[in-house]
Amino acid sequence: MAKAPADQFYWGDWLRDPALQAASASSRGIWMNLLAHMAFGDPRGQVKGTPDQLCRLGNCTESEIELFFDEIKHLKFGEQITRNGIVTIWCRRMTNQEAARQANNKKMRDWRVTKKLL
Image 1 (spheres, rainbow, N blue to C red):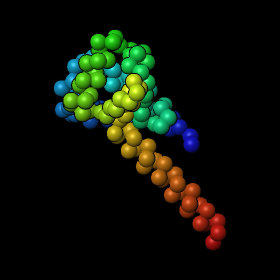
Image 2: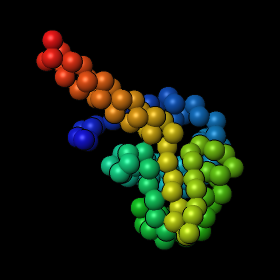
Image 3: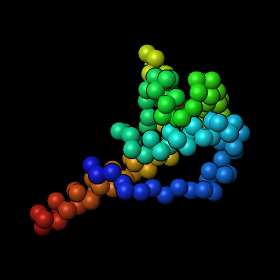
Image 4: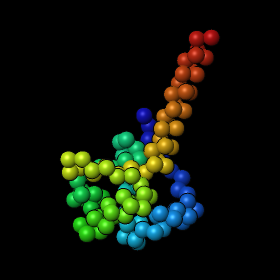
């Protein structure tokens, strides 16, 4: 499926999210970097890797990524799961938007097939 060429970023949502605003400045910066990687992720809206790999993606130090993991877990501005040393982080909004986009694409494909049959 084709990737979206651009995304809308809702600045007001960023500024008005109390959980995100309660996070440290370093965690907000890491989150922004990871959001950019999530936009190109497969599946879209998700990024995964070892803590060291996520450090490089988030452009941060080991101590900053540990603080980020703690804040995302407690403040819940995103989702995180760790299994077998691999950390998966995702953005609920981006994941939901991608699911809606795929559902709409399927609906349009089905409609086109139905219309050709008539």
